[in-house]
Each structure stands twice: as structure tokens, then as C-alpha cells.
Amino acid sequence: MMRLIPLVSAAFVVLVSGPSFAQGWVEYSSRADFFSVNFPGEPTVRDITYASESGGMLPGRIHSVDNGPNHFSVTVVDYSSTAENELRGALDYAAWTFIQRDAKVTDYGYYYAERVEGRRIQLTNADQSRTFVAVHLHENRLYIFDGTVPLGAPPPGLFQQSVGFVDGQGFRVRYETMYDNMQPPPLRVQYGQQSAGVPDLPGVPLGTRRTFTEGPFAGETWGVDGSGQPFRVREGAPSSAQGYP
Image (tube, rainbow, N blue to C red; front, side, top):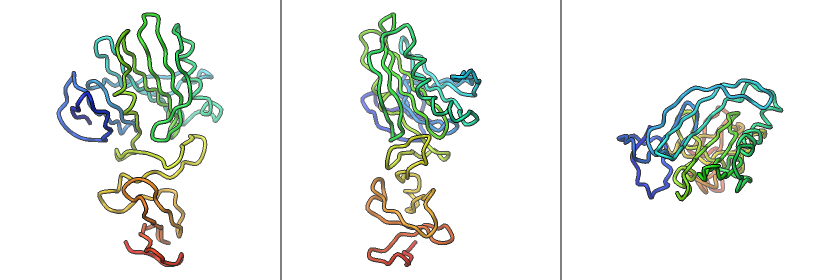
């Protein structure tokens, strides 16, 4: 879903409805591929088959916009059916496909968005255009965010700064600590249940508590009772006492 936003804004808002303009920057969210990013117009979406490092053929999709000499795309590849070694190497292999191009690598390093770890690559191409890439691995999906601009143009900041992830309901995903796809996921900052006034507590064991450090529940302590229902812990309540809904 999309809406027109000012060119000077890099605000990140998920799933806001509104008019679509081919030449205006829009905030685009894909529930099917669990990401969100700003595009300079409505993207086209096409299915692809992605060749992994070992030659396996994996299903994927490309969401892309060509705006004059500018190109913006997000490639999403499903790695859930691959062997562990392929999954572990997905980030570096994706980065390598850019590094080996007929282009000068001007930057390569560690990167993260919403605390999801990744890699960043910047290239100067043979025609002097510049390509800015961010690669992430989240919930066994490979994400390649690729923005290319012509010689003399500024970096695609509105595209780069808006990279994010969403859950199946379209709510923003952000982690309280760094997310590594090969490790148990850390707790998420709570946004999706904000309107209901009750946090979502995935992965929190029954009978335990957690104190939020970010988001609308920052500073509050919540627990999960024996039936799996969240409750807010009263200040000073003993560990065996339940709070109030």
C-alpha cells in the first residue's frame, strides 16, 4: 500500500493508504515479502528464480522502479529450503555478486537496519553511475536493496534510509538487540499492539516477565500467565503475583 510523501522526508510509516502517483515518492510495504521501503513511484513485481552459491534454484521476487536513469529494486529470495551452509553464506554470496561486477568498489562493510544485520556495498559503474546496495538475511529470506543513480546525482538517501521489515499483519519489525538469522531471534520492540494497549509477547515463556526498553511500552513490565495471556506487572508486586490486564 502506498501514499504520496514529500521528497524531503525520510519518514518510515507502514501501511498508510492514499493516492498513488507514478512520479511521486511512495512508502511501499509488501506483506507477501515482509519488507517496506520508499520508492519513486509504484513498483512492478515479478517472480524470479535465484541461483544460490551451490547452483540451487530458489524462488524469489523483484520489486522495482525505473525512473529515468535511476533504478531502484528490492530482490527477496526464499532460502528456507536450503542447507544450513547455504543459508550461512547467503549474505556474503549476494555481496560477492556485486563485488565481482565490472565496477569499482568504493565501500564494503557491516550494516544493519532495524537491528537486522547485513552488508553494504557501493560501486562506481563503467558509465560512472553509482550503485548503493544493502543486503540482509531475515527469517530465512535474503533481501537485496539496490539503488542506482547517474553521474552527478546525489545518493538515493530516501530509498536507503527507509529500508525496513514488517510482519504478516504489516506491522513494523524492530529488534531490541542485534538480529542474526542463524541465532534465536531477540525480543522485538512492540509496535503492532499499540492501539490495543497490550503488547505481543512472542517467545516469552509462561510465568515469566519482561521489561520493555523501547516503543510505546518502554519502562513497563509485562508477564505471561499460565494460560498464555499477557498482564502488566504492578510496581512492587512479588514474582508470584499477577498484575492487571
